[in-house]
Image (cartoon, rainbow, N blue to C red; front, top):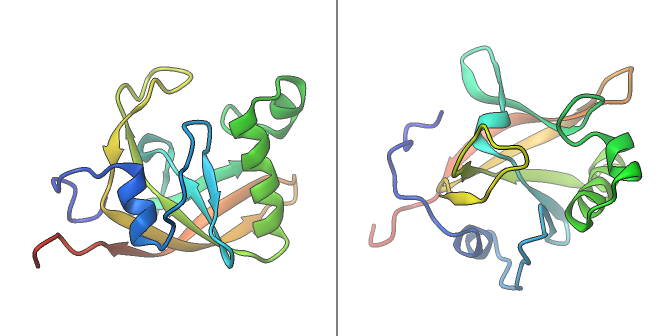
Length: 149
């Protein structure tokens, strides 16, 4: 995890504003189209480490429990449908970033809300496996400056 793990959490609205988005993001929005970039809400507890990076890769579309495309087709929910459309955009070449919410209860399925968002943005790229799973892979973690600094 980034060195600011103990830093105060922000509201999603604040994190998105730091990325240049001042539009309202509904609670059903799990991903956000900022024009040249798609920003995904990537839950802290669902990241898989790669090497020494705790935020190594994140599932965008899998055949497993998280962001399963077949599940989104058989049980459509607005957030999931929008997410999958955004995955299509980044798989076609649009750039991607991730913001990191911290779950109230990481064991709950589905998540029961966020305590807040880490004051970071994860810049990365998308990789697609031979079995059509899509992963967001971290290139760089950027910490937002603390207010007043």
